[in-house]
Length: 198
Ligand SMILES: CC(C)(COP(=O)(O)OP(=O)(O)OC[C@H]1O[C@@H](n2cnc3c(N)ncnc32)[C@H](O)[C@@H]1OP(=O)(O)O)[C@@H](O)C(=O)NCCC(=O)NCCS
Image 1 (cartoon, rainbow, N blue to C red):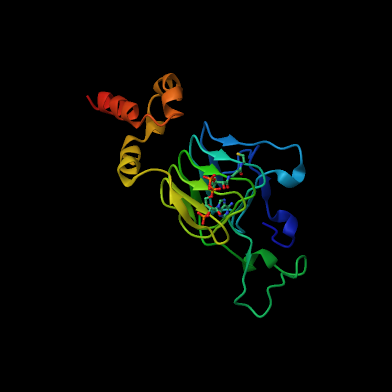
Image 2: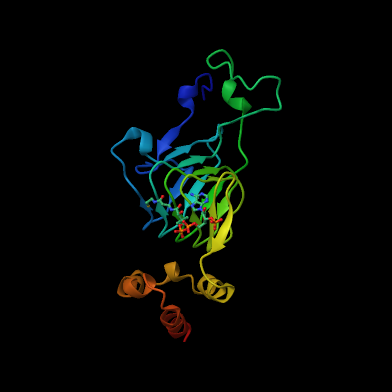
């Protein structure tokens, strides 16, 4: 592969990610579309195209988000300048690993997610945040660098929802219970979960 030019660095609009094997977006995830180029959500490939972006199901990604799988200039060298076109410049781009966005995650407008980060199921990333570290399930994080703002529910309810994993229910059951899932009636979710166990 010719790494001589930054053109080979892939910046892919995740609204239409195509069939790149380093982007895995599960069904039922909603990527907000945009007519404006500048507010599309983008994933930046790692130089080796092996580091992955995974976004699991029932997640919502607002406009203007950036997922940086690579694109870290190696600041340990004398210069961070890449001498594009004059040398194999992409070998100086580093990554901290895969980005994994869990199920039922909401990422607000203009958030940036850095390589190596896992965002737990049910979490919320506030608009404009820069997420540099893993995010706990069902927590809300915000700011630069993103820090916990609050939890979405009590620990007891979070434990229940982590056990229930409603996104694994049969699609029909999810569709029948959209109103309950879109409410705060946790008891009903528990009832359905218990009935599935029988
Ligand atoms: C995260 C969010 C949902 C929280 O909303 P909320 O529950 O109404 O929370 P509040 O506005 O009361 O803020 C709660 C705290 O979080 C902080 N906070 C809110 N948004 C923040 C942000 N983007 N970055 C950093 N901190 C933030 C507030 O300053 C406040 O801090 P405090 O408790 O120290 O005063 C909201 O701020 C947000 O970012 N929404 C994204 C909207 C968006 O992108 N929509 C796109 C359409 S899909």
